[in-house]
Length: 294
Image (tube, rainbow, N blue to C red; front, side, top):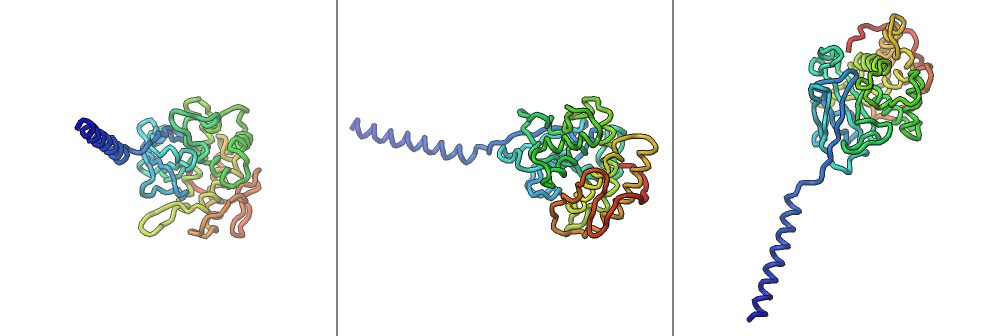
């Protein structure tokens, strides 16, 4: 009888252990990690930030997202296996997003991003990729990487730094506002202005929604890169060059057929200030434009 009772108890105990294991596997939440940072040209409040898991620069269902707070900060909760796999995109929305440089709503919608390689968990960090900071600089570096012309992100950062005339050792992915880096801040403001000026060309309708035409977006970023000397300074000459560049992009981007499957835009990143070539249109000199408001 004792042996029989002991056997029954063992069976019951085993069943309890198995049942607990089954219950735990079905109710425990999947592991997650936090990716936090800020969005700026100036810190941007009420900006939509998301992990772009299909690389279309548009927030889709089931993509982790957040809205920046009063300091331009965001925090995404994502699957740890997605860290470093997908880029982060931030959309500053006309009339909604507040630029803390002016404490006014931005007057044009524009899109910023950060390459997947730069994304790090909040508790981690990689040298040169400070704090998941999304800005026009990170956006330009991301598009440079998309061309396939750079072996590492550091190579892309070095070239952009050189073209902007910034000192060696500066973090091109860092928070230039916190670092009080006026030169980087000014260049970022000008880049955001140019990006905003082209959004009517870059956004298009997809069924009942509106999204980014990636070909035109990358053509725009290539144009900015090739004419980076026009966006790094202040003063009358710089503003005149910016105005001319705005008008030229408005003409040239329209030659990229909207809605085509996006392609490698390496030809858009030529280096120097020669200009972008697309759909038979060459050159980026001349042209007129209006308004430098973002």
